[in-house]
Image (cartoon, rainbow, N blue to C red):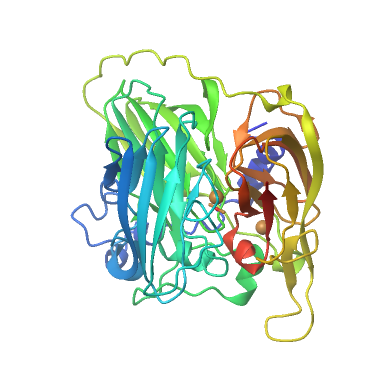
Length: 487
Ligand code: C2O
Ligand code: CU
Ligand code: CU
């Protein structure tokens, strides 16, 4: 059923009928000189795409010093004080191999507590591993160590903060970076990393703080960025094939990627892989999802767009205008025809969890229950799972290590929620009441408003305690998270 469902196609028609919805981008595209970015290519549709600096593992180890700090930098042609890893938005791109070890010394120079999560890695959640219960106070340092199994699947992952209560603010402010696990080569003329995020800035370059009502739907920034740039420009030659690793690092915004006029093929989503590249017209990325794409270049100009996605709403609060359509980047394909790239080699099959027996079944519901009418900010809806808000001292699911479980995730609320489970691989087996035939591994699965999905979860390895949560990060911080103990 991924990446497009009939329902989404219908919504596309609806959106078309409504005409242009707030896209959140475009101020500097108005042609007004005082709004244009002060770059050499102002007026030409933006600056050329810059990719984050790459750091690679050597001899099986990637060692990184990571400083989370507020810095002045340029965002969309404007000086802005944002949150950075080592001074840049996004942070560096980490490239590793299966079996590698990643060692990170994280220094917190922010004024709020933080920590680090390696989203997409199947590694131990214990101690100094991918442990979401760690809290690093301002001024403190913490040493992480992530050991990737030898058979870790290749794919597009990413890293970002995960300290409950500060996650949405810190991602919105600029803290995220790409983490690529290599191991499935495809002949291409180049690879690109495209980290898509959104942010809102005040006229004097400060991050706009979230307003209480925005938390209910999840905030969306009015600037959509690719690698920290507003509508950057890409160029290529006809006949070239490129591999694009796209990360939806937005706090709450859904992306429906399309590249009209170009030949787009899907290699995989998250760390799931298509057996053969599949031609697609569009790819839906909920917050947290990643896409691994092949683009075969055709002469002409194209736009990398998000087509707009209706993620529901809460009655009067609505969702109208959220995750609306917009242009992310422009692509100019000119010059002499390049030589044809080599064929795409056969890809490693991902094991099908349906071949295993099911050791347990559970049902988990996204809930937004009426909060208490007392106290500040109350009387709104309290996001949680199964009617409860997150409590770090409570274990919500106890699972025995070694088995495969079937989880039914239901969403009785009027808006979509992206379900994300750390560490343990999920295979989507049912959505919209229909079985999913292909082996579809995901770590973020969108659960549509008033809908449900069924997944199989592989608890074969990595005992310890971790979390599942909504990847609309305002929801997560407000309590839409719960813990799993595997032992
Ligand atoms: Cu990308 Cu628990 O998050
Ligand atoms: Cu994660
Ligand atoms: Cu949610």
